[in-house]
Length: 276
Image (cartoon, rainbow, N blue to C red; front, side, top):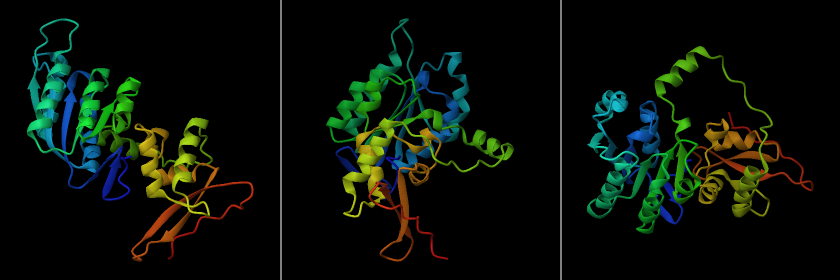
């Protein structure tokens, strides 16, 4: 979640930038990234800002990276050559780290997107955050916890499938049935409830946008898509321990979603339906 773009401003840890204007550097470890996720990756990056720098690192003389060629041209990603001089030593990681530090001091950036499942970037992410920049990590679910936790926001690349693959799936698969009574584990349920409690009104209701920000502050890798939901609101609606309602915005242009934890002493209120 974006952090999920609930508003034009995004809070990541102690940092706050206007997402539509944030200048980001996207640095990709080609050895640890699949080319099929690149379109979904860049669409995800666009939620957080503008990719002012797009670079990918690897030994481009290797046949293993041949499948990247067309995608790099299509998305204007600059390939950086790094020969593998020594077996067992990852020269690509070192090149990415050096470039990141150069960019930190030479470019006016608001954040970095580090695309790798390698824990070697843990210290780099911490150093960038110490300098006041927002760090978004992208990697597979096998990514070591140390790297995941040090990022302001971490997105698992399994959910960033090739857009063409998704389109093909949608055309061939029957329409999905809505999820009911989503079974949530205790750890996730506590995360959601604590976020609601943090900003709840006296009546127990909490604005969904604020809840999303609180969740992101607590858990770098939280994303409703990891649990099969496109939006956070859909996830809350599927959990029987919560109830939702919609309220008109102050300017009258739309409606806002509010969440409340259901207690034994409080009757369940049916969710309000949008005005016709």
